[in-house]
Image (cartoon, rainbow, N blue to C red):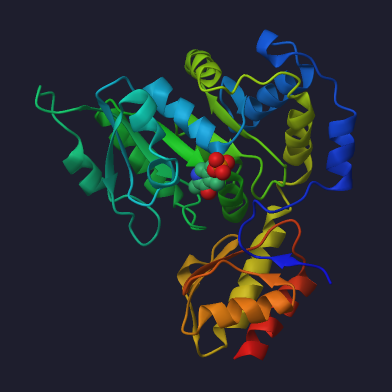
Length: 335
Ligand SMILES: *Cc1c(COP(=O)(O)O)cnc(C)c1O
């Protein structure tokens, strides 16, 4: 029985074709700058995002961390969402390793940060305060696509206040595919962008950080310091190159599958789907049920979901339309 894992888009296994690309990759020592496949991935990622340069990292946590460290000095501050990955889910790396202070704000329902509230927390130049240096957004944010007009306003706010502007674009390709725009329409508004290769794009490992040449040079030193200088990393970069040329446009399928899943389970009385938030590859729902019993029932049918009454169901490369229908039937059979 095929396992249907809806917990996250990080659970994908590399395809045979991706593994073939990894096996046949030309490699060298990347700490010497001599891995041709890593170099090609970094050039490709920079080209795709319209940035000068890029840096291949072990994870999105690492790209976001070295971005924070490269933008902010000790005693400086970044404005960030209360539930943003760069604040809540990265073990406080910016504070621990950079003495960088977060200024969290609640996300609005649409995944944006209210720009009036952002403006209010920007500290004046006064020795009582940390120096506000950086403004971070996330796109997609919990599967929601930030509107382009909003992003442009956010960019001009950053400019008005002399802030640097970072995007946690773990799923920025999902956002671009959903909007039907070239990803540069989004990324070119930012000073730096982190993109995950190991989410919807389906690689086993890796993220890229993109930005100016000078910024990436600083990030490269920080990456070395936090243990991210990898050697024959071309094996991993080859998966990233494969993903960037084969797995971007198909994200539309994941979005269609999420819509079908949302539609299917929203017909069940005990499942309350936030339909406004079903925009890309995630379905958020509140389920009025004994979740231990439900997860066990689903597990018996080969369907894996995260525990908890507030559940996030995520579609990805290893989920096809039959799997969606099997999952919906699985939920129905429980209720
Ligand atoms: C997954 C994710 C990251 C990076 O996570 P890693 O597991 O460290 O690769 C960053 N931001 C968001 C929004 C994410 O979903």
